[in-house]
Length: 403
View 1 (tube, rainbow, N blue to C red):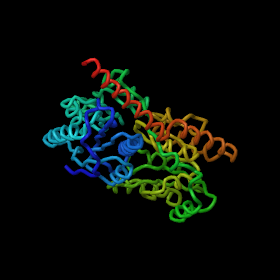
View 2: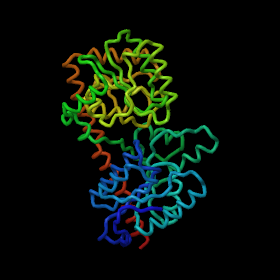
View 3: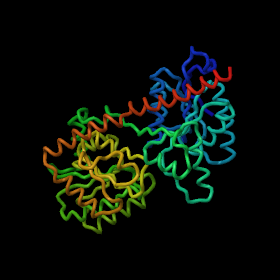
View 4: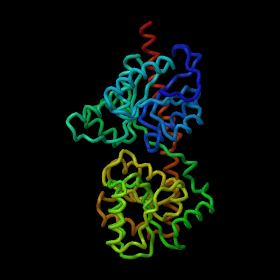
């Protein structure tokens, strides 16, 4: 176990009003992704609110953000599914909870949740989870393994879709579910803050010709993101006076990238479709797009790209399943299309590319307002802290009842 940040962890029990509450989040790692982004945002929000904020994970590059935000990071191999390691992790978490006088343990993934739940029960601390996805149910014991994400005093669902799934699949009591949509940094995804220099750099790097419409699909290279559906839809448009940019890292999926390149060549779209790899400046990338596509063939628990595109004032086309219907209002900034249907996607692309300047401006204004009003990082953080306060009130009430 490795500890970073030298925060004082010798505070009194929570019934001592002189100390702030202590929240410990537990997740596999701090590398990248929606789970990690949410954990870091909440860790910083807790520190900003004057609470003691701890993250336990196996580490990663986002640890720097945790420390810069005034929170504490403790390194532990909680990503492991090895039963012996998990048992050892539970013991270590018990020690950490006691030493740091943790009030609330918040688990964000299954293997860490099993360890954290056991430790929370052993130390009589409040335990909650965030349910992020419709976990695979294929193997006989998988449902039991997944069910740990429903066992907290509260369960945060990242969308109404996930809440319904938890109720239908795991018979969760709806009364303990709190739906809190993921939030994005609306200051980072802000069209007014993207300089001309950033746009010129990306446009030059990607060799985009002036005046040619740009269709963009952001997302890592994995089959269920629907890249091949988009490529088929591009072919159905029947013209080549546009660019389609597939933006995202392959992360060891070189075979899938080669499959996509072969599809592009077979359809004669080499001059149209470009796999540009990872991009470190997604706000600028989206500013270059005339339309952003979210073509996932599997339903997603949220779909952060959808909100990021709206925050940048870009028309969005999304597959009509999962949480997409909660994020896109058809006719007011976007379209919903049948998943895996290139004909439907081509039709929506044609509609988006045909928007006149006035329509685009109206779409942009409504999309930006919707993203800022309903899906900001600040709104997500405030709602999550409200859940923590609910649990703290329960601690206080149980203490008063015992007295």
